[in-house]
Image 1 (cartoon, helix red, strand yellow):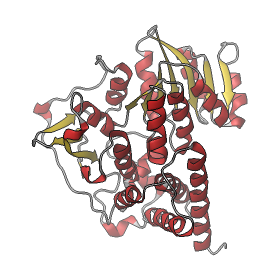
Image 2: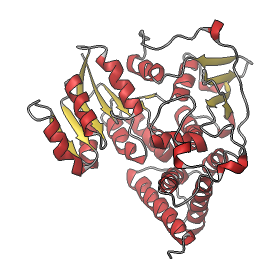
Image 3: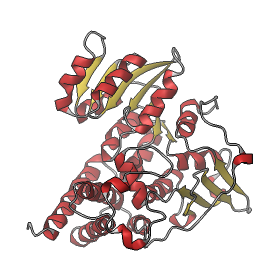
Image 4: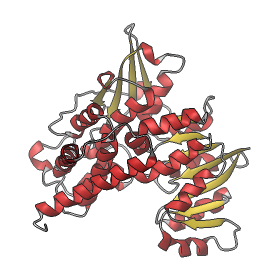
Length: 392
């Protein structure tokens, strides 16, 4: 029986992971589940999967979680430290699906103990790619990509050396505003940005799709995970989201990964790797597929893609600053303090100011340095927004 833990169990990736685990009763021992404020759902999952431990990220939610799990024998805890400690508990396979920089610590703790990390948390590689990958190597840990695009590349590379790769192309939906005229984007509302054309996801990742910050993060993630040169990574809009990635080799061959847009493809592949197993997903019927469309993303509409290249060129702790500034900009947009098209500008200002004032440092070789840069970038973003509002 394999032991597993799921970090971010109540989010969209976590829910899909729970779905797959629940379909194989008796095959898994669930060590830990973690979630946010939806403690009712977290408790339901913990009971259904007979988890040993349930952790909420928020201390004030602990009483409700304890009450929901009273009499079950399931251990409860709360807070970031409790999540880090849960990641230290031995498990054969761990899903890292916490959204944001908060997912970095459990990712690191998992590979420090030499486990298999199924990585859906982009921020772990964007903020601290060299640190995470080196820690995994030092502890003989395995990292498996769960982003659909990176899973697709990983599968296309099976049996192939990265040295044979000429170009990796990851695909994007284009988000909620791909067909909007540019002049409308400045007035786009939070509600409008929170509707994805192809997937039902959480609000933050859906808005990141509309800005293509999620794709910018994935470009950096691909560089870190596969060891590619930035010039070897391209992005195209593939509206139907049937092709998730393409890998072009130096002999002219191109391997494309196709499948219906269902995250259980990538999750299931990571769960059963190195084998394949049947999955409860819709099959692709090419006879019903009328077209596959491609277009080059306009960087005026999606400036986040240009910023990703700037971050890779800058190196050092630029990825940590970029992610923190992006998360802060998203917070300010959701709160109504800046507009939709102001987010990328704010991120660029943060990077420019930090680069000018103190530099972006060397490659992230410690968690402490990453977290310090994260704090600095968030503070800088807040200062810029307050100054814009005339609040000093």
